Length: 310
Image (cartoon, rainbow, N blue to C red):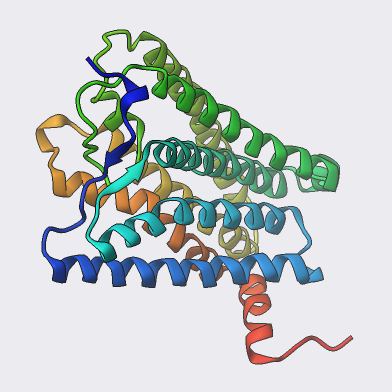
């Protein structure tokens, strides 16, 4: 009986079995990753360099763009490499690192989206206290807490998962390393520690989800009480991008991990994993820039060369 220490590498799930489809997947992933790099890079540079965007909402958006970039750069380059060179290998150390980084960026993004929801709640429901509750120091602390929470949760899950002995081969049914696929390789029946950790994390995350739902109930109630139609439209414009990103992020992630086994299939599992780990982070910049005129102007200003007059 072998254990995890005797495994030198894992075999990832191939995206296709024919050379033509492998090259097609490589081109698609290359296009998505380049688009995501460009879009998120433009947002990061626009927020960092544009003094008009130095506000809590855009500060958190900059952090969200960083987490989106991290998510894509953790999974896509390896998938592209495997498709281009027709291989499935990932080293044991590479799999450990990839699992940790995937969890880190996804969990950090979830916590950042929750913080951004609080920002919208204070902005609309408690506008007179906005400067007090969301000062620069408070924003820095909340962003740091989101990143730290993602780091600690990722570290605990990674350590717990790879502490189990693995003796059922090294073939992973996914194009990147993730916890459920690694647990399937374990010959140990002592899943209790990891299951308890997962239940705790899910319960903790569900609490944040309830906070998001409660906040948006209060936000919509406050928006509907705004007398002017222009005021309501402006308030909705600042909330709808965040709500769309949260909905896309949670719906794809929840369905991918909690779907009924009766509808599970290899192609569906692969499509859903690509949706929440690759497509969603790539779409976030587009969703935010479509509805936010300030961000759109700041992003296009360096490209068109039209800088504001001082």
